[in-house]
Length: 246
Figure 1: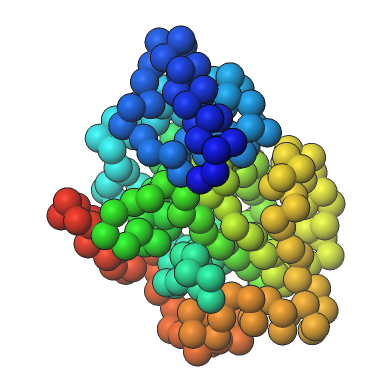
Figure 2: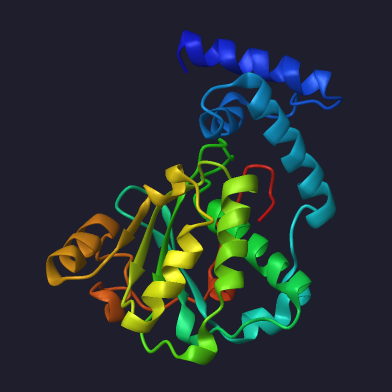
């Protein structure tokens, strides 16, 4: 980090303390994500950080979401965690045709947290730095009306924006059917400008080739133009951390 970033981080730490909390356990790269999300304003970033701390303590009191807490969501095997992309970002693929609106919203929210946490953890080599990002692919192939879940989409994006700032490197939407366009426009109304700028709706063949090139054939499953096999998120094995967790 440069002098400007160092100064902003220092000011943010002080602002967090004024709010009755502490950022002592967190290094610069983590705090920078919150600063970037709040246009480098230390006070706004501190407020966002403290809100994240409170949310995290409430949503994930044990530090992680166990698979037993989200068994119903995992059973559909609708999300894949494929490994690292060309740019060394974890690749998360959501196969929307296997999803149905959840009747258990608390479990669904825990599922979203589990997916994001495990994706980020899969990028960690030895020790978390704090600036790890992920690539997401939302596959709408074979989507039917019964699979449409605008609320679920909005929940996922709101979690990303409020509690996982600067974790999303890129999100690709592929195989979008015409009947979903109006739903997608509704969802986009809930997205911040910074999030919208990271979304690519893949439409034509040229865009598909670019998508494959950007992500990398080694990590993309064969179904998407790559050479990898499908890996459901519950089957993905995380690299060990220096402290022995994962």
